[in-house]
Image (cartoon, rainbow, N blue to C red; front, top):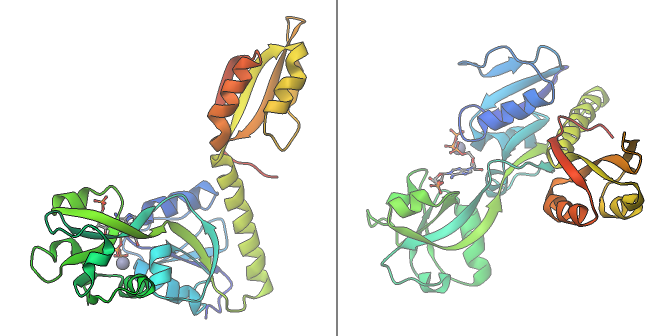
Length: 289
Ligand code: PRT
Ligand code: ZN
């Protein structure tokens, strides 16, 4: 358990999630002094300390309450079968755990792998997948360089993480089927947390929410004929009423609003059709409800 006063967060020390996680923490206003060769760093302006460790250890440290929070891939948390709360899916570290076979193996579907050897660093997730399908396979647990095992004749197929697919290709493998999609997640311990630390967690989450909302939104400004205001207002999927400003040209107005990024293009097209001109779109730094 973490009995200190500071909130303790587990972060991957050095790997694919490290840079973006630290960047995210800095983006929500946390400042740190140098990370080099350190296992623990304390923030200069928020009562938090980061524990920098291997990603494989993060779910267990959070489960046991050594750290209240952790940033780690869903693939690791699920493989380790840890009992934690998933607070947020984050938009980085995205990948999929996939079954892949040698290009000229003749295996066309997962059913063709019955009785075959599958090399993986994810024995539980792989076993669970094949068991659900009722396909009997031999799992060969390998801790790294899984892609090379078919060439070495250690396995007939593999189950490994894929992002661009370049590594599979370079090793003469083709993807047969994804068994899980993963991204970096913020997880929280289920162990009791004292009220003061819970306050820190709530504050931390509020900042993250503001940042995530901002990243998923855009600020738009446009000019429009005054008589198209009702139509334009009905197009803008804003939670708040848009800001309407008069322009020097008496028949024209300026409209400002915030729109969700995923509706961006559709809204733009409709706004143009409704007579909006000079549409300007800007990123948003932060949003506090
Ligand atoms: O030292 P430590 O144990 O902390 O790090 P690690 O080597 O175990 O993990 P690391 O840093 O490689 O990955 C950390 C996390 O990033 C993973 O647990 C995933 O949640 C996520 N992630 C996202 C990936 C990938 N994309 C990924 N492509 N993890 C690994 N890969 C590997 C994959 O195993 C394969 O070897 O990259 C290769 C394939 O990449 P593509 O782009 O060629 O398909
Ligand atoms: Zn690891």
